[in-house]
Image 1 (tube, helix red, strand yellow):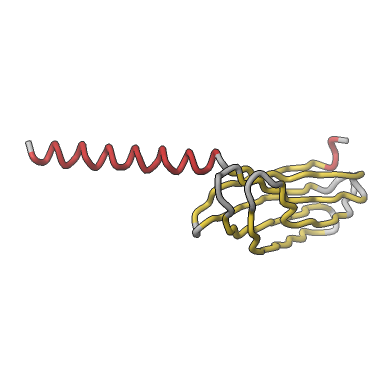
Image 2: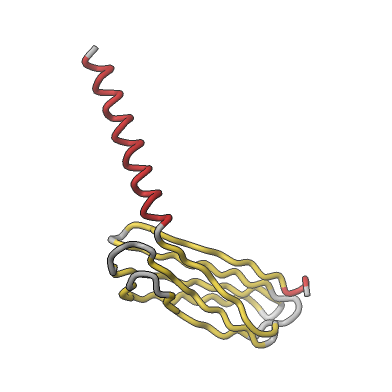
Length: 128
C-alpha cells in the first residue's frame, strides 16, 4: 500500500512538472525569418517573452549551407535580456545561395539552462 502511494505521488509530481514546463514554454516564442532573394538572403532570429517579468536568455543560431561548392556552417551564440511583450532580434546573418544549395537553420533559446523555445527552417534552393 505504501509503495502504491509513493508511486502515485511520483507520477503526480512528474505530471505537474511537465505541465508547468509546458506553460512556461507557451509564454515564450522563438522564430526564424527569411527575407530577400535566394542569392542575397537575410536570416533573422527573433524572440518574444509573454511572461509577466523580464528574463535573461541565452540563444544559439546555427546555419548550415550544403551545395556544390561544399558545406559551410556557422554558429552564433549570445545572451539577451527579454522584456515582456517585446520582439527581440537576437541575431542576423546574410547568405549568398545558389539555386542548388540547401540551407538548414536552427534556433535554440534557453532560460536558466533549460530549453524554452526553438525553431528551424529548411530551404531547398531548387524549389524556387
